Length: 113
Image (cartoon, rainbow, N blue to C red; front, side, top):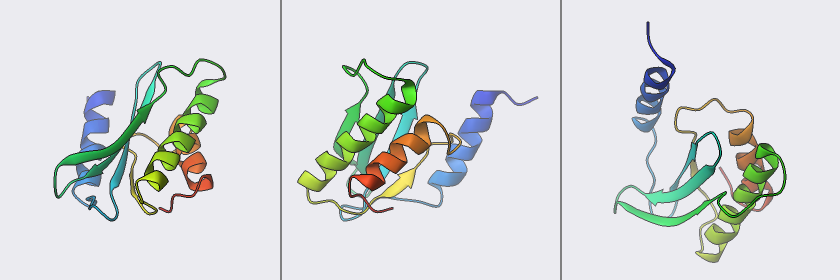
């Protein structure tokens, strides 16, 4: 029987085989733990992280509300860096809950994906 972590890694590998980030359109990858959520904008060609933010320091609200605040923060950082379009990498997580909340907030703040 395959564990939950092995299943996520299998999905993650399949997704990463299809998408890649560039300097003009970086990959926006999401990692969520039980308490925090992290997001990075990555240029895979150069192998650098262009911008990153997390939920550390944000303490008010539910987990979905905090994820939405992180989505707005990464969109703001991206727009300041001159990035308007990204490729969304859900990192093997299902697109609902905190991941969907983060993505919707980033779209609402001006990012296109």
